[in-house]
Image 1 (cartoon, rainbow, N blue to C red):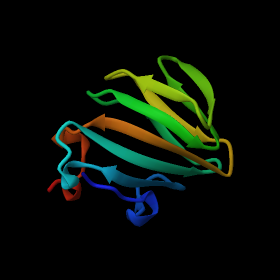
Image 2: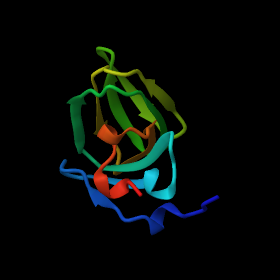
Image 3: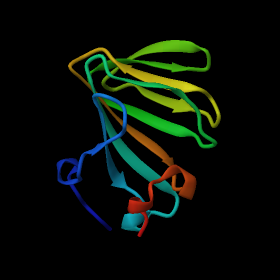
Image 4: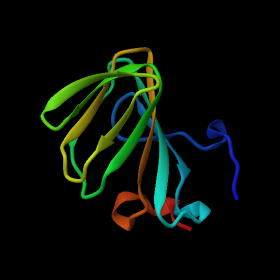
Length: 118
């Protein structure tokens, strides 16, 4: 078992202005099936529409935002959760000072940066 605190995990740049990621659980810790990431988007920040061959499970921790997926937009807030199927174009935009969410994905080599592997 591993127990950690998200603030002890380095916050990394994503390449999108105002968007950071913390890899909370990854193969680096021995996770073989899933990875858990913590995203923070500052007000107005966006992750544009994109898609992957894997699903996403998302839980909104703090703030409000817009998530686009399946050809529609959803206004989401803390406590909401989402499922994004594989290959569905999706994107995120922060409406509040910070929009923070957990995103769980399969632990696939193509989905996870090399430095998150053991």
